Image (cartoon, rainbow, N blue to C red; front, side, top):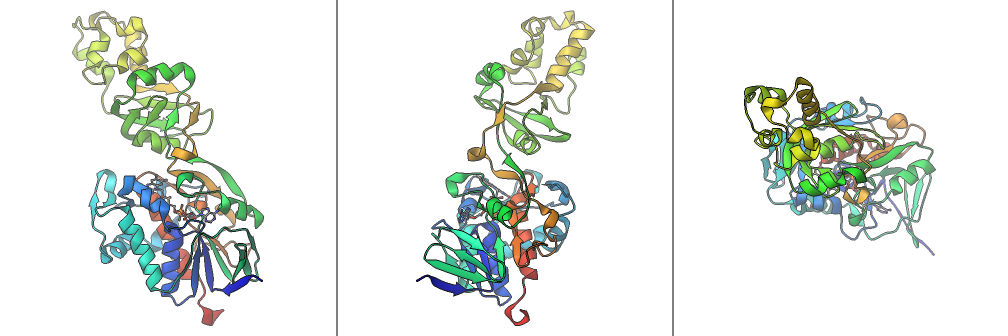
Length: 398
Ligand SMILES: Cc1cc2nc3c(=O)[nH]c(=O)nc-3n(C[C@H](O)[C@H](O)[C@H](O)COP(=O)(O)OP(=O)(O)OC[C@H]3O[C@@H](n4cnc5c(N)ncnc54)[C@H](O)[C@@H]3O)c2cc1C
């Protein structure tokens, strides 16, 4: 016979959003369980920010998020701000340092931050149902989560299952499958914050430049990011590329300015009488191997004093508006996030409850909400979790 247990709230997923939601719901007197197939909670938090966890940002605004409905994030971000996140973790002993673009990284490491959430849940009496395989979920009225031999019942189910990126730490697409089961649409998921792979005929360039980093502006589908770009053996990576990758779809071109904030034409004008080859002049401001890789041999080897107006224009275009159509991304295995996800159209931005399935909630990365690089994804996990927990009905009001 199956063992059965009943909770006020069951949260599927013991990640950033699930733990934060559990903690806030338990603080409000709700009897909460968090269920996960992993043996250890918060595995993705533990690998975040290169182990240093960029847990929020000094500047958070709806413009930092990609969502089919750009208004969807506004309510939760306003109700649980970066200052709420910072003060919660600071009160629990997290020390942090600010890096570029207002990014806040922990000093004691991502494991320490994850541990705080787990400890807080344990202290508040949250049942951690770890190492459980979710075999089926039925409902509502109540929801029944079947883990094979055990059935957990609840009037309020929170899907906090994240997205399938970084499967090495147990990420799956179960959240999307459950959403479809309950009649919700899923905006086509794809890897985001991920390195891009160049087509085969452009790979030689990457091979010769692999390991070189430089500041660049990368533009994709109207979104532009100026940050370091890194050449890999197969394509490009680095913050500017990771940011742009979240806007990239198959077949879309990428435009790269390898000399942001400077004008190549001015550099040429300033050296108009020089007998230097163009490649040598450009090597003063770009990695040495880049000019010959992006310019034709004839152009790269032309003396600056001999360059025609048209040649300057061609070179300038290659330096400031280098166009490439990536063949692919490096896939979910290397992607920090999943772009797309459970459509927000039928989810309340206030309660995170599904409008058509009473009691079913979705929070965190499982939703069609993707933050830019910079602590915005964990911030969204926390903000959506806190907003949802605030609206869960305590038992007396059931
Ligand atoms: C390498 C890496 C570095 C990152 N660095 C940063 C950073 O520095 N700053 C930042 O803001 N964001 C960062 N992110 C993104 C951020 O970690 C996620 O957006 C965030 O953790 C999402 O929280 P979540 O609760 O929605 O999902 P998750 O934290 O992924 O939690 C989902 C939970 O669901 C469980 N689960 C999944 N499938 C199943 C299943 N089938 N059965 C049972 N349980 C299941 C998982 O085990 C997991 O515990 C990084 C991501 C990666 C991969």
